[in-house]
Length: 291
Image (tube, one colour):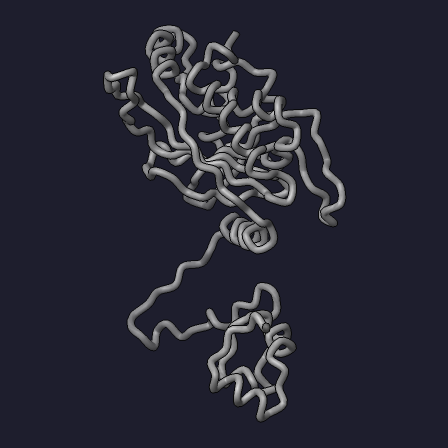
């Protein structure tokens, strides 16, 4: 039985014209066909074909145009290709922040003395670095032919920064060798220089994995797109208060939503669940990684 989706009238017309629907569907690059698709002159769709987007919007009302910046154009091409080529899955989880918020409060005076703002993101980078060490398949890249997995001996963490001139992803090198104060200072420095377009090209490549943090803006969950040649990306959204039951007693707990998107060609669901279980444990119990 053919998997082609076509109305009875389209199938009858195809039979009358001697058109093989399976062959025509492959030529057009889709599985749904209508009567207009039976004409041999109907153009075949190529990968990335955007001809159907070429619309005269001004015919429907007033419009204005705004040029896409160079960074935005590069990001658009990369994200479009990644979304089209990578079989991506997103695993959703959350982690308790009680301990981290307690440490940030306890160390506030020390942070002030150091001239550093101790952010929750520094804890996330530290936790991610340790998980990448413990789960080597996440700290890897797949060769373009899909035949070889390149396992990395270093741990570099990318930090996605939203700037007026487009998304930039500066990278913290050897994040697994750095403490909380160093990570906090480096995160602040990279974010500030990204906003000022003062990030050098060699500071933006080679990440093991990227963090996309929307916690300062909002949201409860999202599906970040894997940034190749990385195999996974971690999304973070706004902290929420969740009721946790301690026996018969309800207890409000601040928890952070976590979204791990991964390349299913290399990483399976059980891998992702174990990775995120370990990650959530480190965030909930930061003493395990600080010592």
